[in-house]
Image 1: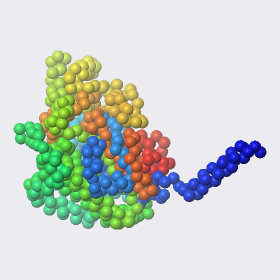
Image 2: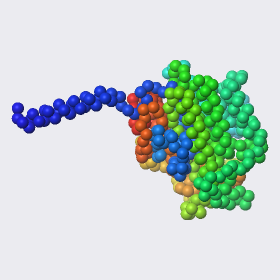
Image 3: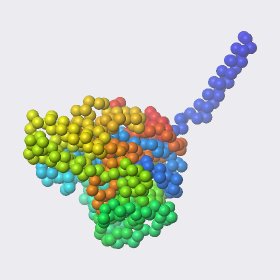
Image 4: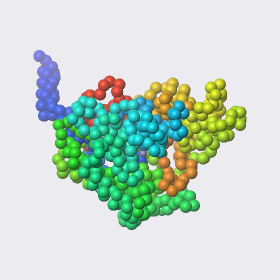
Length: 549
Ligand code: ZN
């Protein structure tokens, strides 16, 4: 045997030995729980954009800091679809599906076949209930076309419990799904449920009492730490509405102010913690799921934008509340894993954006509304009666059902022409154009506008055409108290959200990859050993946060 050959052989043996030793020392891939955690905690912070998270990340010292040091932070997550609203966004979080498959294409859509006066359909209502309309409705998951994590867990093992709580009914419905054991949401005055038996559990009764006491009491202005005082510049939005230096002072029994304050999330988390304790979630023989929707960030963002003192107070309170919540979970010794994300991002108030140098930030022309545009079109086309239908100034619009079949093609062409000619409009897509492209997959930062629209398009529910406003144009055409800023567009300030995973055995990391909220379900499924039928999800398991099956 030649000397060189002997050396090679020895090196090969040494290498083989080292490999074998490494295998013995670490037989299990280190990413993810060695056994399924007993409780999955899924938290949605409504309107927590990636921009907002980035602005406060270095200032967190509580729960959000812990999630960063103990878990995996995807700072570049995406609610990748165009309709960046609450109901579609929550429908992606625990289903692994885009709104094109969940069927939740918007918070509300118009169904002109509906045999009722109000043809505006609310995403979380049960249309089958007599007298239901978009304002007075029975809460229901009926419109959700797919299964949630909790639904799937229960199907795999009926002993698994599926609980959802939220400040908003639609968040609790879309994260909990059809097979929810407990579902509680704030109905404007009290905690309510579409599921509970005759008597709410004691845990709910206790938080109910606490909430009623707070609701009936006035609130003094909150103390302002220096970090937030530095953001307290006031901006005049209308002659009567100014934002930027609010401190959440509130009169007794003011329903809108009550949900638009940091303590609203405190109550939601208290309700979640009480239910976990009382129902002994995470202490049964199967893995339980609790989904928690924290809605105050969204109400505060709509009321004040996110660049001022108000959102600063909210972020610091959220960080503190989550610290307390995690401390309770840790002390309980429940073997849990957690994921936190958001249903959509958000744009700051136009007035503050402009002061900060974004000259493109403007409010949409109210004349973009389908009612106004339709009125201009009617005489030209020789039509009487309504022409176009839809809410707001962008997104899904419909041709009125009363337009005769022979006229529909030319009416659609004229609507598209007029919207495209408007200086604030970036693009217009007809349902036929949208339906021709496939539902996109892969890196959501690279999707075209048409692909984003396709990801929240459902031919049975979406409009006849879809209007995309230019970047930085606010969809809030007419600001008012409680509504100065919003979300809902195709642009990344509305699409980008953080996605945080924390589970036993998952090594802390901060990957830069652009990931999608539809990746959450397959990743969590790997933690708990839940099998997903091929083709039943749009997302992929993220190996940075799990040992993918
Ligand atoms: Zn929302």
